[in-house]
Amino acid sequence: MSVTITPPRERECELCGREERWDDDADGWRIDGESGDVYCIHEWDINGTFTPLSE
Image (cartoon, rainbow, N blue to C red; front, top):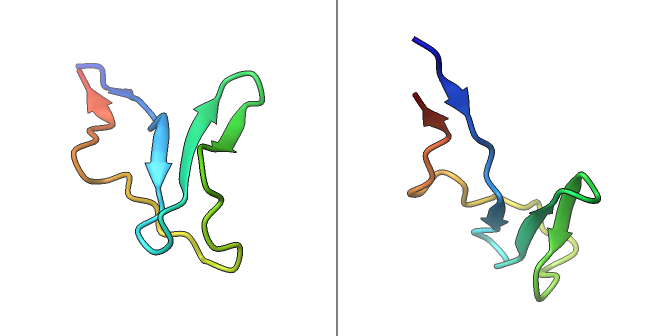
């Protein structure tokens, strides 16, 4: 049995509301909209309905 792990393509900080999307061209995260609090230690909401494992 083989399992594929799929990383998230977007994320949102639960503390300040900052939203980011993955940019394949830059190979990194980009701010999508407001930058949120620059002093926030971001806690990303990536575990809600997102399922990283697929068979």
